[in-house]
Length: 248
Image 1 (cartoon, rainbow, N blue to C red):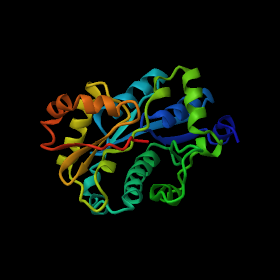
Image 2 (tube, rainbow, N blue to C red):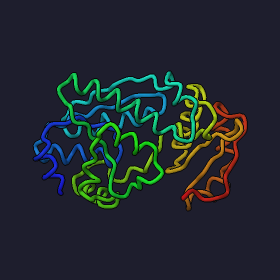
Image 3 (cartoon, rainbow, N blue to C red):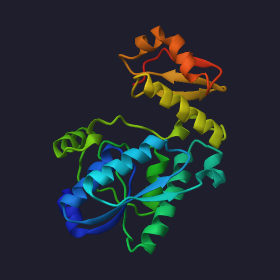
């Protein structure tokens, strides 16, 4: 099945839109196929501000109206407890909210941006998507992450080389309860690192400290610039640790 085939068969749907590489290309492909796919961005404490800005920018580039749905995901006790399968409860909450609004808007079919490179094994969030009958056209069309980046570049989408970005909740160890204040501190610290020119890193919380993980090519730079990093992160964390293992 190609994406054109999918959208010929399903010409009207709601898309859980993150503004990332995959959902951005899916929205573009839907528009090219002439389908009525409406993007919904679900705003929670788990998404940094730049993600919403990217989603709005991409939708504007395509000339499509973006619907933003605020969701207090931390009011869900199963999510806030941060168990090992937190993603299951979170996806249930996110797409449950989307399903209700999309149905009211006349879009009963739900889509997401899962691609053929995403391994469903051991991923609780994927289980939630199956239970909610969410379709993943990129995966069904056999499109891998590398192919989606190539196609996005050819299409002129600015998201083509956007680094993969997991939600802020992944920075907190499983079993440690989630709260808005800690998530905001992580976002602030990561914004500070972006401003210093670092990319594709993670600022993880470890015993109340910030544990920084950098990819190959940036670790030595970060070690040499430790004093500057420490100053930049001081408003957010009293203790900053550098993980000497390269982020893969």
